[in-house]
Length: 204
Image (cartoon, rainbow, N blue to C red; front, top):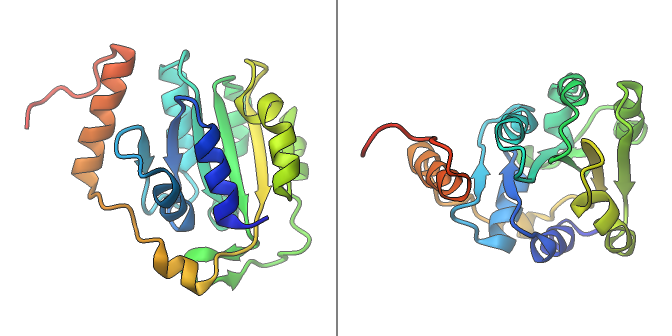
């Protein structure tokens, strides 16, 4: 499955979810297809913790659906996040693992053991009941409503098997144009507006 085709599809089907992206290509790809300036937190230097950020949002905003993207390079740095996510079992959190079997942010260096890593099996070994994998766009379209968008059936772990970005794609997809303080303020203000919950307690 082409990386950018997969992300375009998700952006088209998104329906109000708050999004957290991981460091590296997922943030670039999501910015390229969504140009979202308010409802996405582009978490740079996340080191495998983007889904923990997403879990915090999901826990504090139970009526708001959260998508948390993570590359498999980041996931392999901290697979223990699955234990926390499974214990919380938040029905409004979807962990979207973007698996290209490479470290996309470091010139597509291959992951160790890349052909044998079974991320769904890893999730299931930690008790995750809703663990799914898609390796083509047609299957993703068919499964989207029941797997990614649908229902309060429990926490979902979704693996998207994609081809690594080409060098041209990486060059044409720049980093989202936000620094940390701007992003915190913009995203925090949006969360306040949609939830009525106090997030920011200071004035600029």
